[in-house]
Amino acid sequence: MRYFNYLRLPVASTSYVIVFILLILVFALFLFTVAVVKKFFEKRRYRASFFKEAMDKGLSEKEAEILWEYSVKEGRDPFLTLEFKVAFEKVVDFYLHTAPDADEEIVRSMREKLGFDAVPFFVPLVSTKDIELFQPARVELADGYSADVALFDKDERYMYWAFTDPFPMNRIKTGDEVTFVFIRKADAIYKFVVPVEEVYKEGDRIIIKVPHTFSLQRYQRRNFARVEVDILCKFGVSTDGGWEWYEGRLKDISGGGARICFPYGKKKPSVSILSEVKLEFFLEGKHFSLKGSVVNEDLREKVLCLGVQFVDIKDTEQQAILRFVKKEQKKLAELFVRKR
Image (cartoon, rainbow, N blue to C red; front, side, top):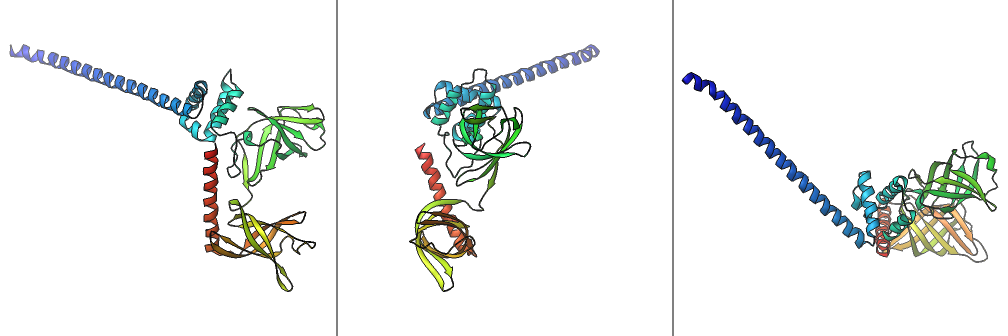
């Protein structure tokens, strides 16, 4: 009898094991179901939160739906499209190139409502869509030929550049790659390369149609950021007899130099590029007396404006100017956000 009982023990033990495994599987399935349901409701709450914020910013339900759908498709956080221009432009570009019924007017509406339709001078460009109309540029063709152009028009997909130089149309054709270089005022030099979509005449103008791009190369023209100011200053020009002083105004300043403008009478001051000069001014109550070298000049009617590079500036003085510039840039950024 013991023998048979001994033989039945493994059968009972096996049953227990099977039941135990089934219980584990059921419990695992339960946990998985709970996780899926939890994730589903979290996503719904997240989506509802996004739509609320989008509508608080003035977007319509359809506009919010577009940003949500194409942010998710591109693997981006939808909330970033409401706060950052770069994220917004990437998502709407994806929408314009993949949606069968993409609507450019909706994109323009969203951009305006979110305050992304204008880029202040102290913020670098992120896309050719940010280039202002009538921006002059230099275009270089594949064969090395170059000419002056200006941005004549643009939409959400293309730019239309008009040649301002006489241009032989047979030098360029659809598919050619061309290089654009332009200087953005108070910012930097930009360069981008794009294929030609079309070349055509509109009246007397020759137009080159090219697609937008995010591949902008930016070349900083200055080592230091600068801000516009309007500060009274004294300006000294080196002469054989010492220093000849004028009263003028600082028009912008950076840690590396400044731009000054001052009126003059019948006689233009004896100053030119590389002339040694002195600047005296007050900045936030602190007196500055700095040596400089003229790096550019802009002569207008009875007014001379000079770009001056500081020479042998003390570290303490430069740091004080840099702190001032940073503070002013922050004020400008906050003002721009409030205006939007």
